[in-house]
Image (cartoon, rainbow, N blue to C red):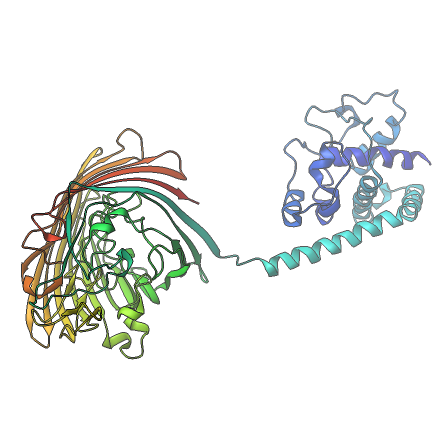
Amino acid sequence: MNLLSQTMAVVVTAMFLGGQSIPTMAAFPAQLEIETLHQNTVPVSPTHPQEIAADALETPDDAIEQVTAISQLTDVRPTDWAFQSLQSLVERYGCIVGYPDKTFRGSRALTRYEFAAGLNACMDRINELLTSSTADLVKKEDLLTLQRLQEQFAVELATIGGRVEALETRTATLEKQQFSPTTKLNGLAWFNLTGAFAGGDVKFEALPNTPVDARFVGGRDAAGRPLVQTTDRAEPTLSALTWLTLNTSFTGNDMLTVQLAAGNGISSINQFVSAGFLTTYGNPYTDQTSGTVPGRSDVVIQDLYYSFPLTDAVKLTVGPRINWFNHFDFNRFTFFLTGASSYASISSTQTSATFWGSGAVLEWNINPQWRFAAAYLGESVPYLPASFGYNTASNPDFGLFGGTYAATAELTYSPTDQLNLRFRYNYTRLQAYGGQVGGSNAVPLPYGYVDAGPGFSIFDPVTGTVTSGGLDYAIAHTFAFNLDWLITPGFGIFGRYSYGNTNLMPINQAVNVQSFQVGVAFPDLGKKGALGTITFVAPMDIVNGRQYFASGGGNGGTIYELEASYYYPLNDRLAIVPAFYAIFNPNNFDSNPNIYVGNLRAQFSF
């Protein structure tokens, strides 16, 4: 092997270790794996070709500029056997790059693949010289040597070419098979340890011997009085809930949202509640069942909607299952992920009969101080069974406009970044089932079941059936106000008030219910990002029409809930949230003992 051949064997190592050939070798990442060559190891086949290709296109951090004089390499001496070869390639062909410490490290070994790849790089350099005005710098004997080296390493060069083609095929396959370049997966998971304790027998209104997960109807005795049961204990529960959300954008401004949910929670408090109160007061929001069978972890589609801008300030959301709470009644201190945590505290109890619904939401950011939102949603709640008259929007007997639906309008005024005031109106139609209107989403009632009054919904103890409640539907009007005010960086206040009028048809009689909430908040309590809240709520104060409640009316009392919760983030992905609830006059019986609920929640986000 002549001088150029010897030089090529030396210089290829320099080119790889110094980084000169990396841009040239971008087509050879699959087998060469540039980073492993820096470690002087034998190349291996990568398992992630796209990542390797990307790495190969990057210049190593330890590379320096092109060496133009042999004297720049401090560890190359005139007495070295390859000095003349290196000098020729440095000063004639510009084929050498050294290390940052200006060394060449010519004693390091190289593989045949490395040599073949480096040979290819030097050939490219010589071809550049041949096609430029400096073509006379290339000697004929050097070209002959290169030709001979090409022949000697033809197998290796062909192998590299084949592997590049294979890499391109694998990369193309990955690009075609990837889920979506514009889809993002986010997840939330909760563990809930919950216990409820009562100081004595608690009265609740429901049919006899009805388990917690089947209290979907109210009943009266032969005298027309609501049936009353008692219980004095509930066992602690440990449950889980998971939400997986897929957000897909097609244009960069739009968003298709699909959220899957699975949860098995039936919180301890539900042992004490009247029919129509399942998963309401004293119940941590994340201690819930996802599907229609309480306690069973069915996977359901909880959210399914598409949002897109109409203008820079106006956004439209349409879909068969829109989460009403994503658009209305927001409050910085009662957002369930970080603030108050019970169903009665996270939002107004007189929000909307369509917690989830089919339809559309229009949002208009008028200016930084004013925001307007409006919606029409037919009821489509994922955790309420259609067999009990729910999910009317997808039922052809009722449809989008003939069953339970709600039209909402909300105006938000934010005079400063610290203060938000919200004014809301709901027009609601509530579909009757079995002649009764009610359940945990019968807003604005908001809990229990109503009928046409004494003489209806009579329970037959022999057959275990209930006569018709006498109602066809109800029309309701709800007015609500909501505020949050961050007075100082470490202290804020919040509150809500709502009033609902529900006309029962065909008897054309009204039930009026109001609700209020007041609370204080302590942002960054004990740690940045933490939040402590104390809130007092009257979730259901019956103003008039109590006689129409087949369950939930109680004996004239009013439920109150006192909650203290503390959101404490351990890191960006995990938080611990202890909460305590005290329930006064449960089920609207002023003779009922207090119920105390403790909840410890672990919250994971990913």
